[in-house]
Image 1 (cartoon, rainbow, N blue to C red):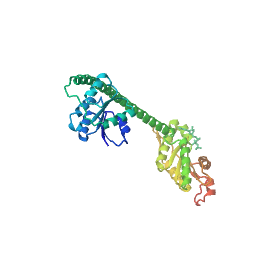
Image 2: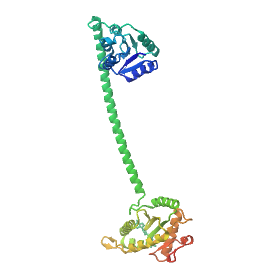
Image 3: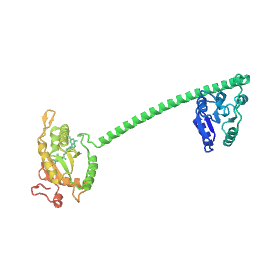
Image 4: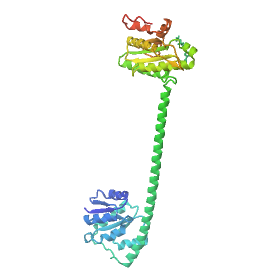
Length: 376
Ligand SMILES: Nc1nc2c(ncn2[C@@H]2O[C@H](COP(=O)(O)OP(=O)(O)OP(=O)(O)O)[C@@H](O)[C@H]2O)c(=O)[nH]1
């Protein structure tokens, strides 16, 4: 087993040689440049150093010469790999630096293995021309200049590349930020639009479209959890007269005042909607028919006390007609429930207004206590 030190500033190049030599029973070490390689070589005494030529800090030629400064590394052989320096003087320099072989990149795997095995078998010490040898110094100067030019050029290109990458990264970050902001604005606008599409413009209550959605959901919940569900269909009595006597603006004011009152009168989980014109619906999950009718009665008496003043004049007291419908085993659709409430409301109007009635089919399906006289 031999120790082989692989020196290259590009990890991918080191990886190539490691992959090639792995599994051949040698100990493989890595260094990222000539200075690091020198330190490791002094410590680990590799039999072979395979190094790139163009590297930061200490190039491959200088590394080969510096290795010869250490007596313990006398038998260490050096192979250089280069894509850029295959000229005449480079080959001469290789000899003066005591390099075993110069391999041209990209290296053929078979050739690399062959050259490595030969170098490992070599027992003669390396011969390096002593410092000050004219030919060596002259050639080292030529190649050294080229190397430095090349390194300077590489550094310039690398700097340019880094600047471009930074610019592009900043650009991308800005684009991502702008897209996120646009998306947030869009989401907010969509939420606002959806909210507005579910609200009635005059009163701010949920509108009829929303009622259909919520009622559908509440029916499904009530069925699943086997709990009661009631709704009130509320109509302001003689509302047309208010419009006719006090004007449309007064009618609007009355609708807004009734809405505010309705919102305050019911629980959080109840849904209050403007059904259209002067009609409102309140959904009351978990509320039995009788409890809903009692709520409707309480609402009527409180509403009568409501004082609405429009442009200095007091509007007449508000009285309400209310049809109450509850979910039953045979009434489990939005239409069926609204129709039942509508029939009850119709009966209230027929009976002279200002009261609340339960839908009549409720009586057939559910037994009511005897005091529930006001069944539609
Ligand atoms: N001011 C105002 N009036 C509205 C609005 N929407 C509907 N109306 C009016 O409300 C009135 C409702 O009249 P009707 O359906 O006859 O109801 P009513 O006068 O309360 O009669 P009963 O329900 O039988 O007591 C109509 O004159 C509609 O024009 C609105 O947004 N603002």
